[in-house]
Amino acid sequence: VWLIGARGSVATTTIAGAAAVHNELAPPTGLVTALPVFAPIPLPDLSRLVFGGHDLTSTPLPKRAEALAAAGVLPAALLGVVTDALEAADADIRAGVDATSDEPPMAAIERIQTDLAAFVAAHDLDGLVVINCATTEAPLRPDPVHDDLDALQGTLAAGRPVLPPSSVYAYAALDAGWPFVDFTPSTGARLPALAALAVARRVPHAGRDGKTGETLVKAALAAMFADRNLAVRSWSGTNLLGGGDGASLAAPGPAASKLRSKRVALDAILGSRIEGDVHIGHVAHLGEWKTAWDLITFEGFLGVGMRLQFTWEGADSALAAPLVLDLARLMLAAHHAGQLGAVRPLAFFFKDPEPGAEHRLDRQWAALVAWATGLSRR
Ligand SMILES: NC(=O)c1ccc[n+]([C@@H]2O[C@H](COP(=O)([O-])OP(=O)(O)OC[C@H]3O[C@@H](n4cnc5c(N)ncnc54)[C@H](O)[C@@H]3O)[C@@H](O)[C@H]2O)c1
Image (cartoon, rainbow, N blue to C red; front, side, top):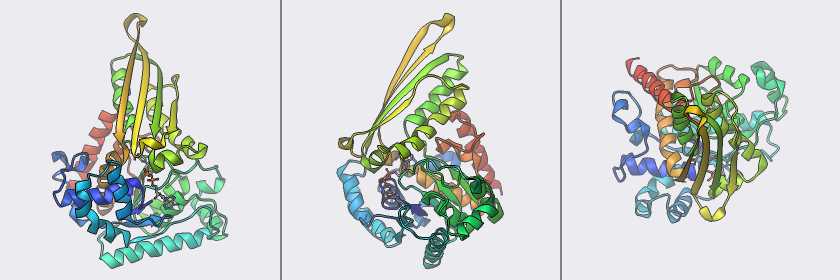
């Protein structure tokens, strides 16, 4: 499992959590693929997963884990027992693609592919999945070369940097024949040219932006209002978070990507753009925790106005990490089963799944189980 942003909170919790669960030091709570319905499906066991990745920071994984333990995200008692796993993964972290450097795009792609190939060879791996867990990027300015694979390849070969780092990683992985998952709202593989590349190389991809907290609740609640024919009139949310994610989402560009992806499910389920916005604020003292408040106003029979409010208090990385492990296991199995292109049944895991995908949580769940069960029959 190759993690982009391998020394971030989500990645560190993923690597530490995999070691803790497979050594039976912690139960697999939060891991969807640990549910009995997935038992017949040939998913790689957590004990068989090996981790490496790219990052821009050099803070070693054990140090990041200590900080997460101090913040209450990782149980301090686990630290000692997962240190070996963290050190092993840390030795497989390479320098990432820096948007501010002048490295030519093709050189960056080739460098990433060399890193992936070396990782596969060093560990004699049966498969590889690349998962983007790096800092959220600003939305990409549209360019016609993003729509056509030949045009994109020509432009990259000419040295024009038309892809953000998330898409450089996606290009490198797909072109080398490895599945790509975007756990962030960044562009990643969400470009027509990269979708064409995935089909040409016969590899699957999935994204984007893990659905871990407020949006998870929205996807369940919005379906409830719709099925009861209750008229939602407004839905407003305020998200306050600390950590590296909170700090980066304080900037308008990354915030725009996140706000867009948080909006998608509601519009799709309720059928129209209803009043209300989502606000994101950075509160450093919250550390790795997030608080979300939502206020929903709706009308019932005879137009009677009512309200629902909820508060979500989450340890974001503890919610995200098991989903990263689920996505790794499912994508490795999907690749092994010969799936290619966008894997729509993984919409259950994402805030902003492929256009046209189902958004209601209960239907997403049913689609996921039906698809995964099909993998076991191949
Ligand atoms: N925690 C959640 O519940 C959740 C849910 C959905 C999405 N996400 C997304 O996951 C991502 C990671 O969140 P986090 O809390 O771990 O953030 P974080 O700030 O702790 O970690 C991000 C890591 O990415 C690295 N990075 C930045 N640019 C990079 C690049 N070009 N190449 C390689 N590495 C790079 C940073 O150095 C850092 O180590 C964010 O984009 C966040 O929006 C998180």
